[in-house]
Length: 150
Image (cartoon, helix red, strand yellow):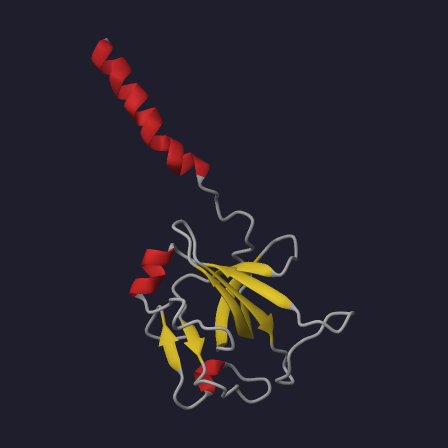
């Protein structure tokens, strides 16, 4: 009986961190959006690394909100150690880096999403944006991180 109680207590303690972690239900995994933007922040956290960038519109220019400010977007990914193994680091995602990423958007419509499945992250060569209506994987000299293909 004591062994059974001890086993149950150990299982409950081990489950604590897993239960504290969120599900992906907040993301609409039936939708995949392809976003291009200019990096302004890379956040390296143990549970999830995040990319923060200003959206580039289909015309190839920064999208602006009603106040004329750039429209921010954020993307959640795996933990910092896992994405670092894929080449996604603060050094590769410096401010000003132009990227394209496929995301499952938030169900509530906010400007945030989760990197879609096994898709890669396309990085344009420095200061070389894609042509209007295109993504970084179409730019000569691009780099795809996190997967074999964009």
